[in-house]
Every structure is written in C-alpha cells, then in structure tokens.
Image 1 (cartoon, one colour):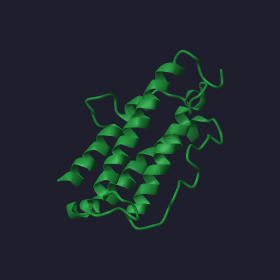
Image 2: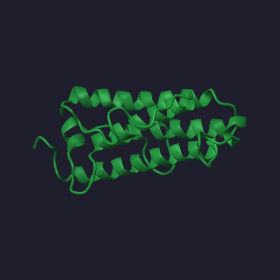
Image 3: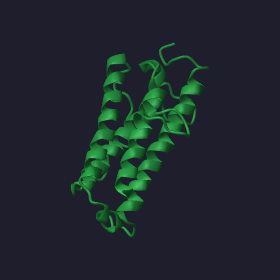
Length: 158
C-alpha cells in the first residue's frame, strides 16, 4: 500500500492534479528553450533543474535495481549544450521518461522491502523513497517560481 502511494505521488507530481500546485508538465508548458536556459542571479535555470530532476530520478531507478550509480552522467545540474527548442523538447521527454524509470523500479519492490535498510545507509528504503518524492516536489516548485520570475525578464535570446 505504501509503495503504491509513493508511485501515485510521483505520477501526480509529473502530470496529475496535485493539491499544492500545478503538475510539472503543466508548469513546463509554454516555456521555450530561451526562457528555460535563462539564468537569474543566484539561481539554476529551468533547464538545469529539469536536467537535475531527470538525472537523479534515473540514478535512483538504477540504485533500486542494485546498480552502483553514484551521480547522473551529465552532472548534478547539467547546463544546456545548445539552446534550441528541439533540445529543450528532448530534455522534457527525458524528464518524463525518468519518472517512468523510477516508477517501474519501485513497482518491482514489495511493500516488505520498504522497511529494509537502503544500501549502506542508516535509513530505510521507505525513508529514501519518500525523499525522492520531496526532492521532486522541491525542484518542481523552484521551476514554478522561475517560470513566474522569467516572465518578467524575457528569454536568454532576447
């Protein structure tokens, strides 16, 4: 039951109707590549945050499968290599896919697994998985705030 609740929360964050805000897909709608790449002082860009979420969801999916992956291959907050709408659309697809990868890895677990220690840590798999939900909500909220703030600043191409 707890496992299904975690899965449902991840789905809701991506494209459901969370009570606390818009879904991540809804928040990202209407943002073009230039706006996604725009960096306000002291912040990561929307692009970097989307890459961060995607990268870590994929790392966690691999770790749940028993693969010793320590960090995303493109880095913690990967910068855009090319500010183009096609690249931005590809990143949004990767982001959606990363939620699917994480959900599929969680689906392979039993509810009994959630009480077990996760890897070599002092916390349970349940604690870890709830942390993945909080991580995704945290960065989705940052993206929502940046979407609002960048509406006043135009795009990186402007």
